[in-house]
Amino acid sequence: LLTDRVDAAFLEAAPNLKIVANVAVGYNNIDVAACTERGVLVTNTPGVLTDATADLAMALVLMSTRRLGEAERLIRSETPWQWGMFMMLGTGLQGRRLGIVGMGRIGQAVAHRGHYGFGMPVIYFNRSKKDAGLPARQVATLLDLMAEADIVVVTVPGGGPTTKLIDRAAIAAMKPTGIFVNISRGEVVDEEALIDALEAGAIAGAGLDVYEKEPHVPERLRALENCTLLPHLGSATEETRAMMCQMSVDAALAVFAGREPENRVA
Ligand code: GLV
Image (tube, rainbow, N blue to C red; front, side, top):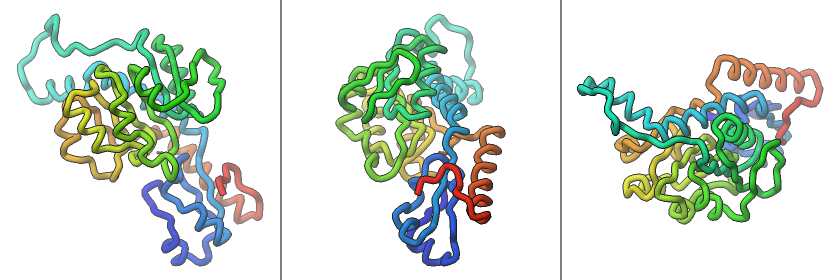
């Protein structure tokens, strides 16, 4: 599971291990080089969780822009309320610029939803140019993306080179009306810099499914009304989890039958 750390010590304790079939598309929990060194194969579960994860990104976008977490808390607090012309106004999505950091499978699926479902112009930051099958403009730098987007959605894989990719400078480049959504890995974001920006009102809000020291969610984040917090639910649908588990089992069976497994990452 993505919560299991597969490092040199783990491998040392499992000398007969043949395959690590991660039940996740991300594999930042695995020391891939150490596995390769010991002849242990590594597989992941790409594709089957793309839609579920992109759906969750849009849920976080809507929860953040329409203040739905805050609204739900209001009802549950039993505070008296009635419809009001100016009560809990949020912002619409139509015409607002969606900025995708990492235009892989999930990034493209989020872009589709934003463009075709909500009428959002799409920009993206990615090393290579991607044809997502919709009008999407590639920007030259991460700072350009952060500065130009109304809503930033981070979908890059975690681990190594992307650690703290979204640093203090990147967050500072965002519009004061900007919304920041992370559905990838917590370590991709400088969480403290994000909290500082949210507390200072330097950005309008955030929707997070992942955390730097997961499952720990800092008290400062939990205290913020302008922040929607979910417990890493990106792929958490019955159908998707069934497909992920099947894919991992198939990979293990292939290896034990002497075949090359699908979705090998190393
Ligand atoms: C979930 O976070 C995954 O990487 O599959």
